[in-house]
Image (cartoon, rainbow over all chains, first blue to last red; front, side, top):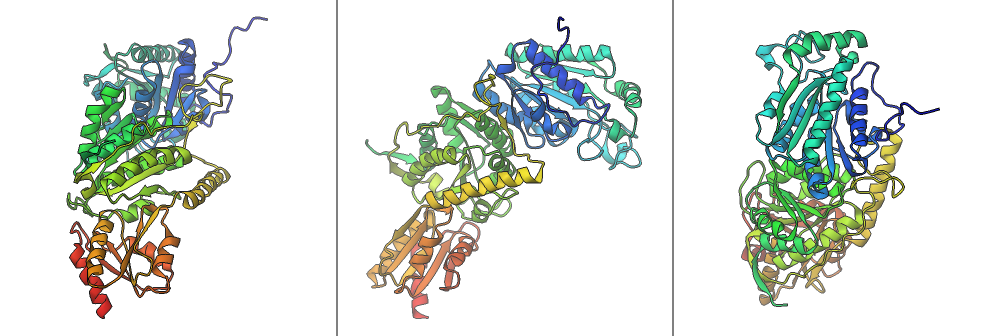
Length: 245
Length: 353
């Protein structure tokens, strides 16, 4: 019988630790499929973050480095400079990692036009540490460190990283996507292809921001979480291509 | 080979290049800017990479990434910048990556001064970063020794897969001396653990990582590190004993201060006082046995530790002699360098007391 579908070679067989309804599993597979389809598995070095994706090094079936919290773009810079333009170096970072503790590293990697690709998961909360407020947490959103809802007077409004990074000259491809529907999942995969393509074609820094879900820390079911992403996150974080060189 | 007159920082940078270092990531801070400046001029001409990072934090993490990809790589900084690198150094130790870090110590705490100091001894030898790790630390007392130790540092880092620090003071970095730099000393071993892109069947998939979430796994890793540290203590400890045979007074000092002590010893000699010096060249591993044996020899009457600090290495000296001898201290916190006359006077005063 003909095989019509099989799991990508660029993922290991390790059972993932992610919660039911979490978007990480979807994005991991999309990234891995793109690596395999572009024939880049043997040239890829990944950089895993601190956060829920801290164990990404167990799942991506490529050489990989685990970075300190927020430092993945700096680690990726060091690796890319050694491995050269024929390699594919990507980081996989959450919103606490990238938009809070690692803002210097992400902004400066883009500023240098560092030829790396960044997969940025925005689920508006700290997952691994148990649901604290992130810079991307929406106004009024309740978390364990914003128990009365995020207050603009106290901690400002959520940060839009794609818009910010698109203003930087060194950015070659910046797109925001989501994983709340089949159509958006397919668009996310295409965005990852374009981001990796920008790197392979030596155009500069590339990033795909993926709006994703965290049912466990949002206190919602997986289905409710998809609805909340659509109703609450999409209006504040518009999808689309923010930079394409 | 003829000797060249070179500034310490530039000589150290060239020594690193001759040791096979082709990647440098750094951030400006006085008094070590001549190292990144030299690297920025040299690296593009030899197919290497100099990159000015956005911070010391980023620089040390670039070192992590480059070391993880198998390169001979270094960074340099001075005290406040080294504090920022400490997070990364802990991760590098945990991920078992080789690299070389130069610290041209300046006065502290805080912004302190830009003059020479030895105030980072605790930070260097007692951790600095978090967790159960050590870092080999070489403390050169001349520009020539700094050059030779730089070249040793890369080999030792690769041999043990560990971060290595060259712990100099601002004087070593800024002083000019006639020196000879050996060429092409670099001989990096094959690194089949490095993340270079994985072809199935050639080797295991490379994972550079310091996370061991299971207690048993972390214990296995730390026991591996500790076994390595015991081996380093046995094989890599370096010390100089100067004029110690038959000495009545034993001085203990490292770096530039040790050199000043030698001048003091010559001055004392003229006055009929026989003094000697035990000089740790590695401050970790600390040459405890040599220090003990020099200070506790039968003819020794008194011992003195001299530092440009409020007294940091003296704690290791006291541990080494373990109460067998009282250790006096001469030093200045901040950046004031003890003079040879001051040291000689202190010895004479102790003798008269």
